[in-house]
Length: 637
Image (tube, rainbow, N blue to C red):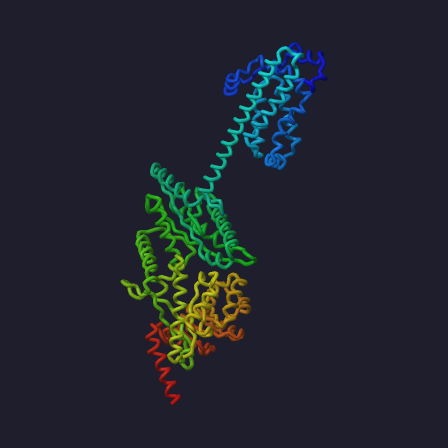
């Protein structure tokens, strides 16, 4: 009773029931719309009489509010981890002030919707900042103990202290129930939010925010069911970005991701005005579901818009990069009535576009279905071919035009298929690129070419180089330089007798290309730029990179005797190479007229069927190298 001794008898009379104002703030219950809280109050037997007693205690509570509030937070602040939770989110003083106001409202003796809402809101704040419910309940026990001590201090002043203590206990019990309910509600909300986030990520692509493969399948199934009911048509468009791997390999995944985000924005833009669901299936492949169109022509119009949007140059690292899109279209129900059929057939149509030069669209047909089956069959066979050594190399001689002397050979891979016979690279290398088998094929071809050339050298020559084509994916593999060095050491071939043929498209990242080529050049490997003039040429990299030879593409040679433009291009390439101190070789020579034009324009090195087709190693040996050795032997005699 010591800390209440300052209360006079008059003070106590001011707390009496007769002094309670009779207005809207009078003690009472106003919870007509909240039966759950009423049920809780009935369960603990919190009555109107209890609320009247509580209201009489309010002046005492107001007088002691700082001590009462402190009793709630002191217990929490004694635990370091809880203290850190509270102080890291807000100030203790702010929390105390909020609780003080609520405590004073508690002792108004009025329970209504506003009171309940505020109590729940305070509890929600504590839940959000991470205050566990068990500690919250412990703090309530401290708060109750403090209030009961205050009531106990009124012994001798009030005859109804026992009833008052019971009323305060009931009120604090209701408070705890409200807090626990608020915690439970908040927990459910957090779980729902977490579940929604998990579900979102399970159905959406993290990079672009588009629906992913799983959601696309669900949406497509629903669209099929709805279209079956409505007897309506819709289209599935599979979009594959041509040359994406080149950008991703040369610029790295960071710029590759930025590029894909821009592509997704372009596709969104191209679908304006259409009822379309867009999904990213993975990598550089997107799928569209187009519904509610007036005619099938709208499907191809959508494809045309997408092709145009995607082919606009992309600005990356201050350089314009050019890509295109190959789009396959399958229409429900003509080209399939299931998810699997529609996607498979749209995919087949897309591959047909790629096969025919890319950058366009194609509707599915039954003929394409047969081609798709053949493609899957070929992929399976190709995987076996690598394991079962069905691949072989043919070698096409490279010749000094005036003397017909063999100055080198180009290694060209062939596939000796067990049932289809000898297959040229054009039939399976694109498939190897798409499936990633090109790494194994390329490494095998490089090793075999070096081994064979070393064998020819050891047999008496001639000491000429072998040219081997590098694919873009090979060129950008992380361990390319080390792999080539290992192969040369393993086979024993001197580096100067290996020439690697690369294409202009591999030069899209000059910094990376320069680093790789300089390393190769440093240990003696020669570099030839294949198909020169057919890509996005930049004369600056010819000056910067260690390129030893330019190879004029056969497309400029075919009509060179009739086409003035081809003549001008070829003459310019030869002159430019001469000024840059580079060798130049023309491929695809098939006629005397083509050879005459080239020799007249100082192109000294040629390659083509006019001189020799690509031959197996044994035929090269017998046709060219045995006579060479015999002539050398005669000269020595």
